[in-house]
Length: 148
Image 1 (cartoon, rainbow, N blue to C red):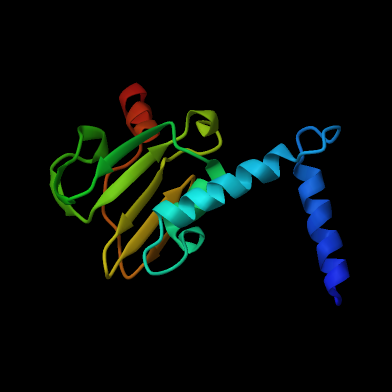
Image 2 (tube, rainbow, N blue to C red):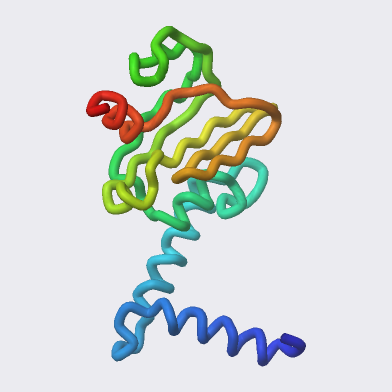
């Protein structure tokens, strides 16, 4: 795409493909996306815009989590038997659970932060910056361990 007109046309095609009801004047998907964008920029900014943070990206992609398991202070964490048992020391982290993605996403979205380390897990993919991340596994892992 070489011109602004070509770029704008391309963006319009993308939004049109995602419109759940093309017969209406509004694009409900686009409106919901921009609402999530405003939310993450307000609630997830930490020196950079919220949409560029790990939490912001997950929130934009999946929306509001159905459940949040929050550990804002980090510190000592007692692992369940399905997680290998014992205890570990963790950075502050949250696990976000999405019921509607339970089959597609095997693990909850998890964000851990410190000045040295960030980790986010979503589905089978995980991205770490600054070194290895240690922490609890997902409820799906617990269920598999209990049933298997």
